[in-house]
Length: 245
Image (cartoon, one colour):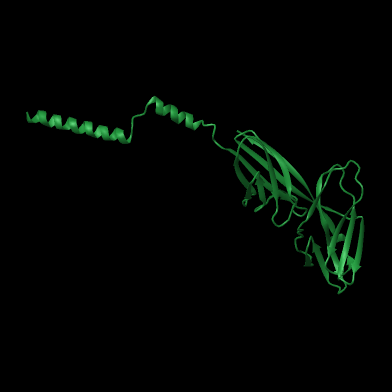
């Protein structure tokens, strides 16, 4: 009799424990399995667009990732990381991507991107060129102590590019050697890396190029332009689209 009561109590406890267990961890059913499968293949999974920004300078000759470039997709903006990448989640279809430099170290470039796979990568590469002037004209204004410098050059054939102002290495009336680098004058250092800061103007490709001019207003009185260390900086842009499932 005592044995029968013990068996009965054990059975009741087992039922209670089983009830509590399944209340916390319900048994797997075909319905729960189907929900898990449908969730794993959900069409709402985002599409990824990653944009890599690279730059090739005359001195390096190899592409280098550009950090902290501004990349915009529609109304979203992101800065590239140390590897030159910016990432976006988006939807299938055509989108406009714009790449720019907050410091105006290279031109602003926009392109259409067709997103049709789960992962799409756009590589935007800015290639630096230094165009030598064929004619250099300097007009000095003594009243304002400024110089208007005009470089005449021949644009590349069949090439769309972005051209900047003249990069001028000069000797002023005080016999000091200086450099005009976009919008500022910097001291001349023979071994210093040359870095130009915008603005840039887009020049469309021409089958038969005609001489063009680039003008800079230098806040100094120029006595002599050092031609061998002066140029017009220009960029061409290469955009490559890679699609991955």
